[in-house]
Length: 434
Image 1 (cartoon, rainbow, N blue to C red):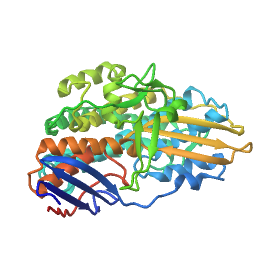
Image 2 (cartoon, helix red, strand yellow; image 1 turned 120 degrees about the horizontal axis):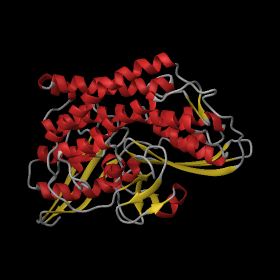
Image 3 (cartoon, rainbow, N blue to C red; image 1 turned 180 degrees about the vertical axis):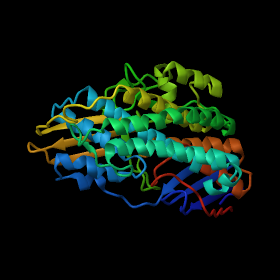
């Protein structure tokens, strides 16, 4: 190896704050990163193959098991795709309840990330319990808000983890008015707490060391901030229906990782809360736009450390939307519409907490799944994570010590909240320099 070249290997066994294993390999020459590989070791889970041969009505409960943090997202993308095949339009009550269910998942997932992953990073703690010793009020507030999200999921899903209340065509049951009234009180009390949390996140997020432009992608809806529906748009001119996803987006296998990477027209891109906020802040209610100004975040933002603020703002939005939906709640004649299966192909994209989640299904005449394809947010962000790591670590300074590089790398990766199986937390680092 040449004297002016250093090869750095950071091995990343993962425990505690997340599941999953990964490693970061760097080749450094003349103070610059020549190659960077974020390697993921997890074996394939083969969920798409599990779905083949299963009946259409089994799909919502099966895909909910893909992720314990965002089961609703997988259910929503699945039911929308299947309803497209079956020419099913469930109507406004189901649409409202699906948005309500998604609000619960955004609240639960974002609050988990803010308080258990990102905030300990930014405040210099190894874990949330350690942070709670010095910041007990903030951690308790975060856990209360996460509990509110779980309560929303349970209202319609029957339980907060791997909910079972969703079906193609609607829901298995409609909540009674007493449950709605009780939850409304909780939501109204939680909103000012969430607003205070958003202000707090703006004070702890560090400034990025670089401001290189990049592409971000999200759904955009004509009337609302996107969750369950919309067109796929980007800051670089993309504007397509979810049916055209495969014409522009490509998943591919890289030699150094079991995790797939995705490109938009050959380039890395960002999905998730910062992308959504950058592209859709004009769709926010006036009160939320006022809150954004109070936090001091400037949109559009290319500072990935502002993702924690974007998540907190979306928590406030989700609470605002949930209150609005429940205030006009009524018990329907039926919480679902009947579905008649048929052969066909359907595609749908919804906004998981971590970004766009795209599903495609092909069914037989009796509604059995012939083929399934699922493109999660993590694979879509994987190439962007590597791009960000390269730029950020170079700006941070490759001559820093091993612990400093490890900590900076962790923070960069966790900004994206990747499911590997959920995010990445390095416990031990070995740096080989030659």
